Length: 173
Image 1 (cartoon, rainbow, N blue to C red):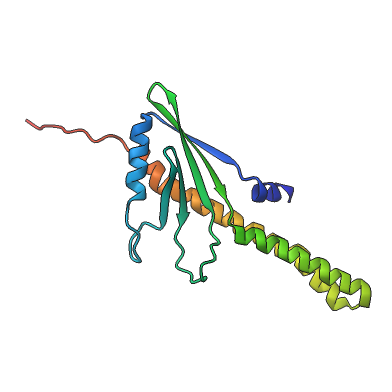
Image 2: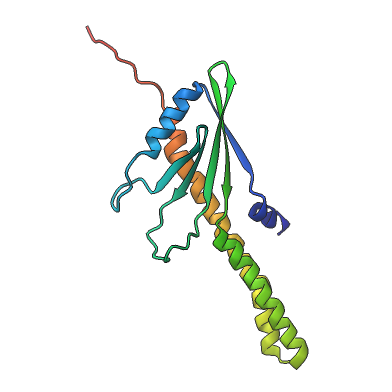
């Protein structure tokens, strides 16, 4: 269980290496991020550059949530190692809504536990246990799904574009 808490509060940093120059990698990432996102398109992520060598990508959700974002954001930093080798360090961060849900359910669970101590009512005990156990578990579970989803989008769009073999022209005689 502690492993899931660690993933929720301190997500892992994944590193990808490519045998291309930094400029080529940045150009290909920019090309991927410029693709249009429409309702029927296969592209379900959007991204932007935060500075010259750091980018962020988010998944597009068709769910109507009035501006609240539940998906994770993947931050990628492009680092040139030399010898035409470039590394991208990626870290997926859960949304603030999931952190908010985590802490609000704990606060309500403690409040219900306090009411149970005052009144002795078992319904308050059950509500407090539900809030203290199920609420944080759900927010951590949703966070893990969102992190896996954004990492999959990175592999589907950016990593696939960067590992695609170079096209060469061949003349048949």
